[in-house]
Amino acid sequence: MQHIESEEAIDHFNRALDQIRQGLTPVVSLVTFATDGAGGVRRIYSPLIGQRAVPKGPSFTEEKIDAGLTAFVASITGEPDRKIFEQALLEEAPDQLTPKHHRTERTWRFNTLHTGVELAVTTVSDDHGETARTWSLARPQEPKRRNPILPFLWR
Image 1 (cartoon, helix red, strand yellow):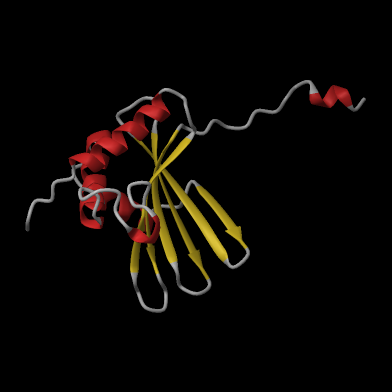
Image 2 (tube, rainbow, N blue to C red; image 1 turned 90 degrees about the vertical axis):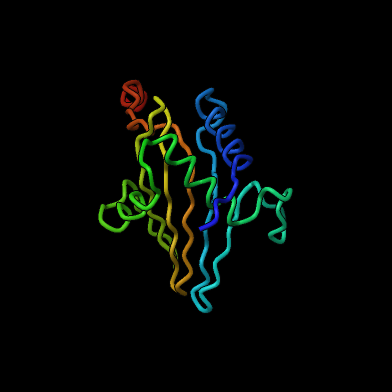
């Protein structure tokens, strides 16, 4: 197998990591892999690829982004292969399940080696067999706290 240079993609993902760590944004999408249910056509969506699937530079082909994601996930989690997370998606219940009209969203969250940063994987499937899997970075979700003042407002 030929080694695919993916340093530019990894640099982009590291910038996303910095945005989360600095508190600039709660979630940054890295890559979405989508599959058409009818034809099985695989598509990739990323900030590294412009409209009509045109890479934003020669370093951002689908293969290089895919390889960059694998290397980046290994660097932030300590797991050598992204497949361990994909296996967890099949075996473990999601942290969040959102059924919507004609589609279902499932989100799994994994700890990383960086405090205050989680690796989130969201899958969306619809009635037509189309699926999408989005890899993103997120700040950990805190449980929603009830405001103790609100009950007194209605008295």
